[in-house]
Image: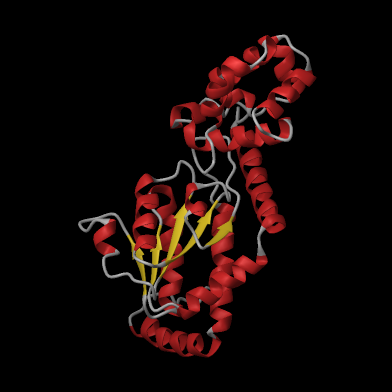
Length: 288
């Protein structure tokens, strides 16, 4: 199990040197700021050398300060409130600045996802979905939009797929009949919904195969999954960057469609007839 950084610091505090205690106190009180500071800048802030900061990280069990800062980034994903996230948007000082910085961050998240995705896991996820008796798609709060989008298209591709939603029936009631022949696709992004994680645990106890779509292998959703698909969502704001997860879901949908090409063709031929008969889409000829 992953040890909470703050708890780790508290446990080792009495054994730290005087300089290391200054670093520890600064990080515990300002972890949201420390996550974006170099070892040199932290040292300068508290009045110690850069090497003292590096030794502090090693004392906590990390290979160096880089690993400690990575842990700080994971920490702020789960610890920061919406109000604290809002206060971190100072760089978005104008509409133009916000437009550029947000889109640049979205591009960065997609690029990071492309570079770090485990293609073997991606293929395994598709195989698992294609073999499943039933597919349950679970994503609550901000992740509900991703779950709904995935569910919308899987409904055309796979007969027995269902999106779990918050409503009259609790999520556990909707998963009551799930069993070892079924797959749960759990979508969870910071701040991780406790209900989603509880539902994943519930499904795993029933023997279901769990595929998680989340932001990190260190996330609680990934730790409980049989297969984890990682898509970055870093955004210094009160909103989540869900562009990379959406792109990953698109890739998943397309790949499943290719695997079921003949069935999909027949399905969409029938759907086109229905859409035309009931005027589902605007058919006006704008070229006239």
